[in-house]
Length: 233
Image 1 (cartoon, helix red, strand yellow):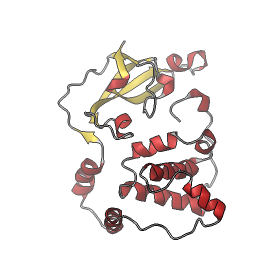
Image 2: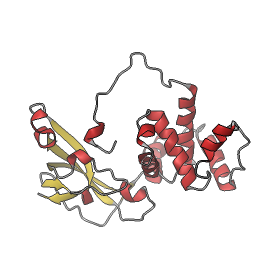
Image 3: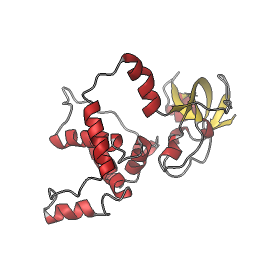
């Protein structure tokens, strides 16, 4: 939830929890994956941004309700749904009306996806080729700005809009503990902005620097953060 302290709360565990609590959750799970694989959603960061724009009561209504709202926003962003179209269909009682024709390019990608799900890939392809094709790791000529052991401060203020910078570490000091290479920058991916890959670091924060006197003694939190989020201490 953006690392915002007002949303902090306990993680509730349910004994013998089913994979899906209802049939619509399973369908939402499938819909989310198909939306990404067929290109309806450009990338998962765009989907995260679509979920971020949901009304608070929808966002907090549950995991799959948040996913479903994100898919609806993406379909509206792409022009496949008019604003308010789904709500209007439900109110008229024609939510199961015949769908519009599927664009040819999406139909082709859907068929390729259907076939690929029945395939068995050689280990080398699954381990090396597919992550490079579908993942976000990239090569960059830019040298990393920080080294392991460097003391940093997370930039403030936090960027507006979609960002992977948690709010509760904004402005807080930390220490770089690992360099993870370069990846596509999620803040740019979410809005279709082309930017060079950024170096990614693991940063350790002392609990007292994040939570003050309420922190448990000896607590440390480690978070992966992008280079543009960090400034030298």
